[in-house]
Image 1 (spheres, rainbow, N blue to C red):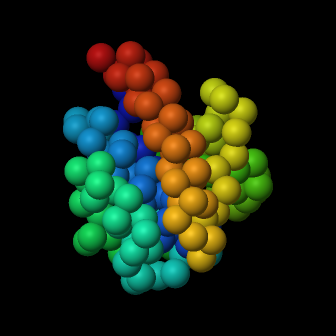
Image 2 (image 1 turned 90 degrees about the vertical axis):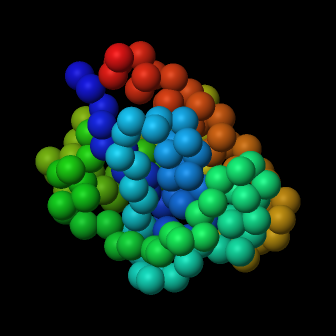
Image 3 (image 1 turned 180 degrees about the vertical axis):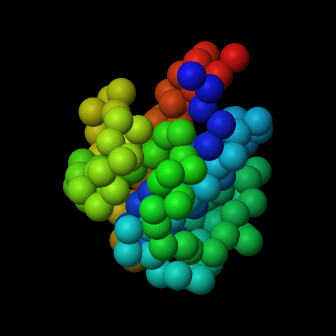
Length: 147
């Protein structure tokens, strides 16, 4: 199975999933990578702290605009990565056809990525560290199955 379309989901689509989208886009240049939120702050840019931390890693997410998750996005995605168990449950409940392709970003380390929204730089750094670990693990697996 080739994974060409990866969808990363969080709650507001302004902190965690835009950072993960940027990391996956850099790691998987031949894949389509998108992000969305379960309760998206539609049209809002990525959080300034998220933009700053990603810029420091050479990844520009300045053009990001938050989008609400919908059925079409879930259908198009070969793999849907979420930040925690509750988000996985919510997507599988709302879009039952997506079962089997929804996983946590921290699945392999059995860790959830907490929301750093309005919690300061340290919270963002902690979340980003977990996102980087998860993105690296998933990117390696995706590259193996897609090559």
